[in-house]
Image 1: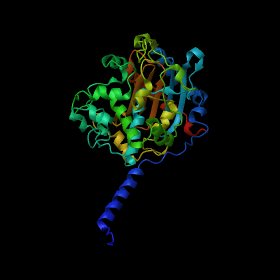
Image 2 (image 1 turned 180 degrees about the vertical axis):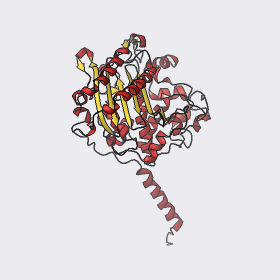
Image 3 (image 1 turned 90 degrees about the horizontal axis):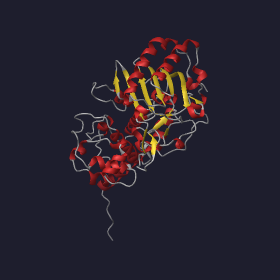
Image 4 (image 1 turned 180 degrees about the horizontal axis):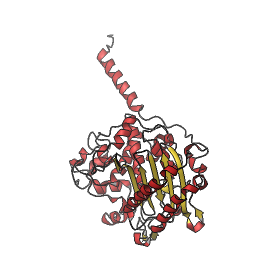
Length: 427
């Protein structure tokens, strides 16, 4: 009987395949047991810790701003060089129950969620699971699935990269995530649209412009980024972000928000809307019920990485400290990734996750939903101011511009009066 000859070339090829297999499968570490501390940052913070006689003027400025815009409650945190100097609640967390706002209360942060999602993408890139230059659709795309392949007819979509999604340059013809009722009517759906329905609604049509040639703000693009995170990690979006982004950053009390008051966390605020903002509306699933816009007007959890996170301003400051490149708090990203996220191209190009990273004006990230308005402003000198309200105003997405003005005015008057303390480590 002849001996079976195994050629060296076959051995080398087999070894190469095995090596590739190991490399691919070591990209995403296996989920480890969650070892969150018994006491969260939100449990340790009280208004009294940021109450100082020399800052009474700051408190008056914030309260005046709230009266001007008829805001029920707000949370403000101020960080400098990765130290949390100030964290305080103003007004009501829940006026009906007589609960005053405290710095440990959590609030919906709307599109500030996109900054968290972008950090998740950068983590995957550092794990060699993807590159932001990778294409999203088509034969070599990350989402090379039957749903997308059967829906997409315009080959322009095959040009979309992960970076295009991060910069709102995907070229999508519409952004339907806040139009559930219209989509149900248009496509004769009997139940509220799923994310798969939204994929079909958008991608069955021709691209509005060639990807990368222009930009148009897109929540839909960040829904796709959430899908990419799930595809590449093999985990749910929320689970991956918690385990690989938020927990490593020291943020243990951030959550995907619910739709209704009954869904809220124990330390989550009540949300309010104004008559001028369209206070009441038909429920997003066309049930026939008339609801307050902030409680059932939109499907918040479905927004996922585009706008569904809620958290305190203090933990949000902690997250920002972990992606800013400063030495005070250990960063969860490499300096190279941080540089990519904050690279400023021009005034007409979105940064990665951030709205803007103009080196002269600072980094900014805004967020607006029915019932909330948020602004993260990281100034060039390392001072970061974060305000989130539990009330939306008739200005809608325009309110953060006035919040930015409040920050700039208060910095001139009170920046040098901020206390020398670090509430991140006050436990």
